[in-house]
Image (cartoon, rainbow over all chains, first blue to last red):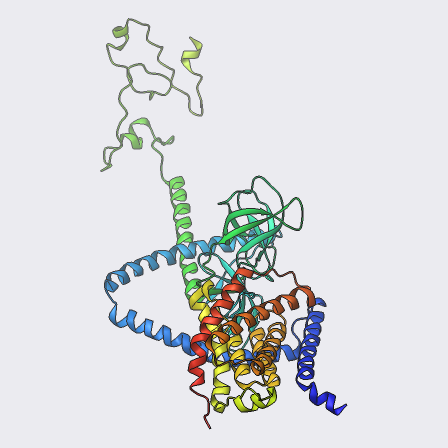
Length: 391
Length: 173
């Protein structure tokens, strides 16, 4: 027995190592299938690996960023002053616009709450830099330089201004791992903008995002925009995902197609990303102040309109029924800004002032019968019957 | 020399390196493997931990050490992915064992042999990875075999450059 163990020592050690790892895999898969996350031991291994790999990665990343920063901030400063002035103007304008939009968003959300909508808005994002990858083609996972101590949590959405990128998978102290949308184990609810067809997004073996298990539909065309559907509780609704590049038949299921997308975000060349840390209203002090200013301005405008309407009601009209005709405001010569008199009517009608005499030759000019002079309305009479109708 | 048995030959040709090399090179390989793809994007056709596993296994000519080194590096790689830990570990354990076993039998000082061995062992690693994922774990994961082929070529080229550099660090009697 001893000689057997000695003779096949190498092979036995190999078998022990392989069996141990297979058992470990089986336990992990069992945990995953039962809906539990990584076990304590697995999490510990991930933590150690991250602890060993992240510091040198950060160092390499910071060195590169430092060189780039020195170049951009000390050597390459052409037109910076002009750009700065332009940007400051843009910021001032955008701040006012943003305040108005935030106010509208608040109102929209209040209305949606009344209607029991489950819409999420992006209220707070945290910029982060990509410092490393998983290093394998089979896993589209990358590491960012923000972690739990920066407020990052598991399952937070990660985006760029161009489109969605992925979701936070594992969080460590100062770093976090993000599962990209082109990973084969990822999943996100999406909707095609023009056809409103919904589907689940995941990555394929080539690292391209695709919508899987879509029933074949002739309306799906290359170039269609794809947006997040908002039903996965991770990505807010309406964010750009990509455009349809091609539609291929599902090799495993008849009547179904896979829609391959060109991602809106540059998934192969990510430098900076935004982590959505809040989808509930959390305004900064400055934003609150801007909103208050905007509301005050809107309130002042409304107050001004109300006051002008009130004054219009109180101001005297052109004809005061309590005054004799010669003392009417219309005839008041003491007014420094006299009211322009209307031209004398050639053919008086019911709208003509009662004391206005027709021109002398008016009746003769046309050779037609002039209308009768309307009777002076008695006090309290209104809406005299039109004379012409009676004739 | 030709009359020496495999065990005697192994004892005779074992290469030894400073402890710093044993500690630093594998860690550097894992770090660079995680960092360089960020720069190179989809053109990162290499697997530095596998190259290092092959190098030390061939140099040490010890299947146990080769298996353990491959297993540890593979597990570290798995820890950086979102996948279960052990997939790369199993693949590289096997690669380390095979490299050390072959290293006993053939002359691994020859550059052409090293190039060929690295290429073949890279493909063995990829096939093992695929086998574990599809058949042991039952995961619905497709593999881009063309990328795996490019990776094997990339590993061979890196080995051709890196092995002579690392050879310079070995302790000479």
